[in-house]
Amino acid sequence: MAEKIVVTAVGLISALGHGVAANMQAMRDNRSGLRHPLHLRTVHAAEFVMGEVVHSNEEMASILNLPADHSYSRTALLALLAMQELLVGADMELLRSEPLALINAGTVGGMCTVEDLYPDFIAPGTGDYIKYIDALDCSESTENIAGHFGLKPFMATISTACSSSANAALLGARMIKQGVVKRAICGGCDALSRFTLNGFNSLKNIDRRPCMPFDQDRLGLNLGEGAAYLMLEAESSAIARGANILAEFSGYCNSNDAYHPTAPSPHGDGAYNTMQQAMNMAGLKPSDIGYINAHGTATINNDIAEGAAIKRLFGDAMPYFSSTKPFTGHTLAAAGAIEAIFSITAMQQGIALPNLNFHAPMEELLLVPTTQLVENVSIKHVLSNSFGFGGNNVSLAFSAS
Image 1 (cartoon, rainbow, N blue to C red):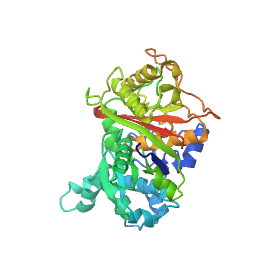
Image 2: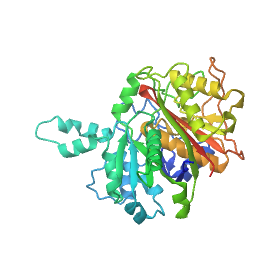
Image 3: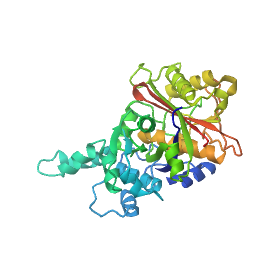
Image 4: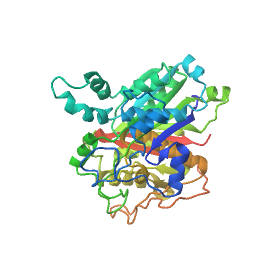
């Protein structure tokens, strides 16, 4: 029988706050992190609400005790703060002495820095080209995490759009099962940028209101930023060193719709197959799932496709399900890891998280998410969905340890 993979540490930062406890308390209080941006320098600041982390770059650098002349992008700063929480109480010598993987995810890397430097770059004789080039690389934050914390891991950077950090967790688990590494730190990070905002706005799928996942009146997503990481390891290893096991990483699947560059299969075939196979790997049936953290972007096509898949798979055994993106915004590459941590913590605390801003079900499905925080529920297994552009689908299953 294959050895179980478990989660032994987590760390995150989002618009709801720095740390798991702050994020969960905000959701318990029905307090969204969406607001007009203060730090993103865009002419659209007054038009759109976003899930922007409250700290400025200078404030994050101060928390991390970085020198004033550091060259980290905002993306990397977010990643370092999330990793800082994960590593609290960690045996750093163990992490440095045994085979370790760092599987990080991103979509546009340090674009937030690049677009600020671009005017200097195109003016002859000015600009810091080395800083520009370093920030542009999507692996910049991966290398900076390892360097800042003195780690020398196997490193990989994954970019599969909005499923990126969910795929990072999947790869880390596979590497442990194959004996390549003893442990894997998996997750992702993304910062808001004008490039991202303007790109999604050109696709006409950003809502100027707080987003409304699975609602008939939904118009699109709200962008967000953040970072999150999970420590994965074999159960025997975790037990041997007396680690606190948060959950079993019991099942996972990634698949591809091969349908359209930006739209999901309209009947939700990819989402359905991915959830089904993740549950099959975990040895679960639909009635075993207590809560689904849905991808739920509040875009027209995604919610129909995912909703159809959920309804088709679960039928009368419908579990609690919600999208937490009205709290954080869509954090792109970080979303899979952030929402996996939300799912694990909800399972630990015996709660189902609310889907904010829901008023009326989609007329095609008449599907109603969980709209209020539900407490004192016994949840043994959860699913966390991440579906990205290019038909990249990932479902992660976690079970109580």
